[in-house]
Length: 165
Image (tube, rainbow, N blue to C red; front, side, top):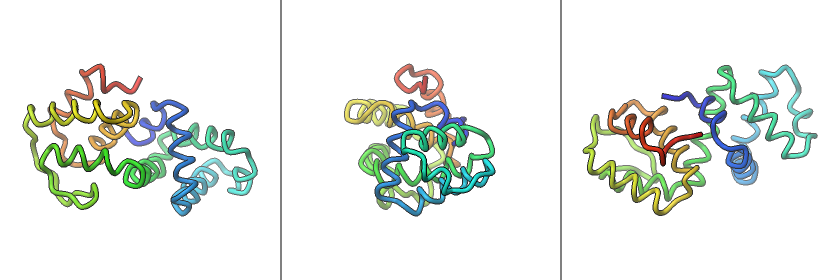
């Protein structure tokens, strides 16, 4: 399983910038918290980062969040972006697995999921959404949840369509 900081480090620079730009645009509180965490842990003032052009600032933020000390900030950013900008993907996946949720948020995940249901859900996602976002979501879902489904882990490790790099 990959940690949140590792996920940030493995995604494409374009997707990382998209996540930060989307968050800056419509989830200002989360963006400011992420920027503040990066500044604080790098020993600089947030204003220094804010004065940089967004592409430079976002590159600095991604480089920082790719380190273990930033795992919590990276996890918050990923969760916030996925729940705000990828709700269709989340709900489609959970619905395909017949998991009850409220707008992508699940109280308790089942301990196991049938192989055929998971396979169909993965095929459906890959047919209908951006592959890079799907791969990020599935790795984040697997990392951030307690379910630890062995068949999802096997798919993430062995299915070429679900590789981060």
